[in-house]
Image (cartoon, rainbow, N blue to C red; front, side, top):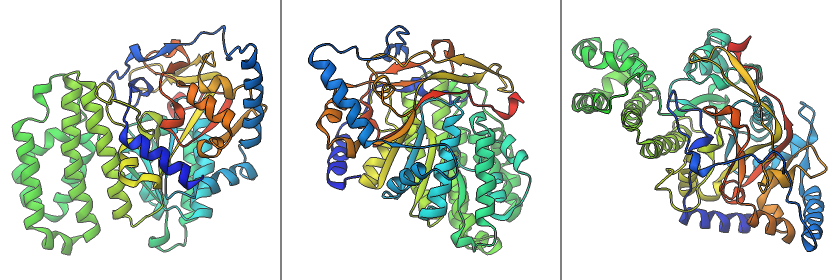
Length: 469
């Protein structure tokens, strides 16, 4: 990265915000986030820019520049290319890794390899993963103390897309890394989302049962309904006056009984429960908007809570260097007006941390991907991506000589041909689990403003989830 160029780009992005990217999702429970008007279906007969005349020369120059600037790699533990990519990312204390499809095998293996390098070689100690605050508590207990069974911990996660062999192997590696280390130097795994509020409510119930069972008995009738996974489609049934009053009562109880609770447990646990109460409130507001089909407002609440929780987790775990894994719809920034799409977590993190936040996108050319085939997400099916979609960044990258590589936009801007192409390529590819038959789709947003760099895989394969075994 070149700091001067990088900061100026982020200053621009901080002043601007975004267009729709809801369709990137599939990570919002059973709700549909797709805004199809903003997405272009693949033209399967056209994959390149089809230049003529001077355009052919520019494309040739561009491809040579990409080949010169790209860092190719193999997906192996000994890959020197991945070593170089991790070293580049490690110039920034907060690294967001966003996958443009939940159903791609390589998008599970690449984070595994990069996280191992960032933790093992570059001092990163917080691995924050898309999942409600508290959802990864069983995983973290295994990673830090060897407690519990990893398969059981993985199967308890609300999001199916982390239940893969690659992610399982990452957690096993983190357990080995932490073994024998003092707790202050261990890598931890935490969720940062606010979607499934029942996880927060259950954590609060467990804590109160330990430190203040009498108070728990008083509020149990009000708290208990919140410990069940939400199913409502009635906005009037969520974030009710009584539920919000319960939250205020919980906050007051924690405030007035802090010394007693801390004495029984610890300051660390007390602060975590305070955060669970805060996140519970955000989750209720999020579900209220979903039930009302106000998806943009819901995303705005959710992504703001995500960013706030990432910032809080850094302080709570005393981890300056953090990795933030999730869908690119959350880890990327925005450009332009966000009134129709909602401000992404990556935009919030950029506004808060500036050039200390690096947004890395995982992009695909063509191949196939997996999506759930049933409501319970225990069976999966494979769809072809087609593509790459014409006039996307991926259509250009697919013509490079390397089948998989990393490009840092701050570096490539120093070469006029790449900078010109990035400016002209205002689309990138994604998949939407709600409409998998459409394969690769183009989102009309400039990738070089949403992300700081990308890892590109020309031909991807479908992920294998534990429920599909």
